[in-house]
Image (tube, rainbow, N blue to C red; front, side, top):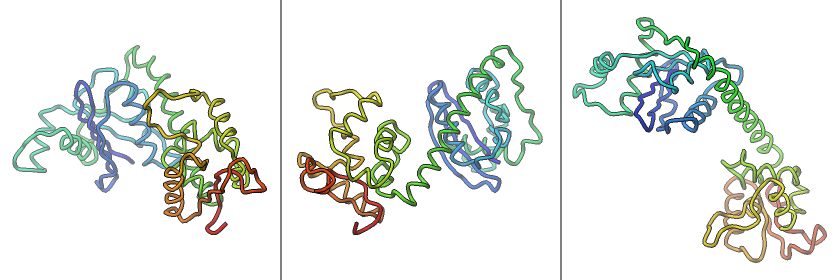
Amino acid sequence: MLFIGNDWAEAHHDIELVDDDGRRLARRRLPEGADGLAALHALIAEHLEDDAEPEQVVIGIETDRGPWVQALIAAGYIVYAINPLQVARYRERHGTSGAKSDPGDAHVLAELVRLDRAHHRPVAGDSALGAHIKVLTRTHQSMIWSRQRQTNALRSMLREFYPAALAAFGDELAGRDALAILAVAPLPEAGRRLSRSKIAAALRRAGRPAAQPAGHRREHPGRTAGSATRGAPRRSRRLRSRGARAGRGYHRAGDPDRGAAGGGGGGFWPAPGR
């Protein structure tokens, strides 16, 4: 099970996740609203088994009102509304000063529902608003959890047979740019044949703007995916260094117009020395 302390404010939520033994798994500050809920669902998905149920998540929070609480209940989590006075008394067990801090209260709430939830009552989501939110929230949660599972499976697969792609994309593996490049180069051999024009066409099909505003510093994702051109030597060196740190080689051929016979543009290499 996961136990979560949720210290809320008008503009943000301080979150702490602990396991059955009280070991801290994560601590975050999330924004109020749908973006914060999405981040919370994703954080929970990272620390739950793939076949886990929402009822295995227990949340302590100092209110029983508002769309945030209703969304948590609608997602299937077990939510306990803890009186602030009880939280203050419980805080004294963890320190003599009694000073309040948002991250500290998130920890207190997580420990309270982990150790003492038998003496508190879960919040019941029985309003009409809660019923409407339930359908939307469950769908939202299900999509985020499914995306996380699929990303984990893709990362595991690339680690085994296409490690240079994993080294190039890193934490952006679930982004549309990475998926667009992998769609046109799903194998290391195809990655070696990628040219700049093929990468640009794939990114346009994925909905990427044709040109960036002046002064925009965002790195061209095709280069991140392994496109080595003479116009970007420093970026190519960074990519080779990243590939080397991952234990796999990143090779830059000379002229990207020479095609497969001459080595092609940059590409993903499956193993060192290839």
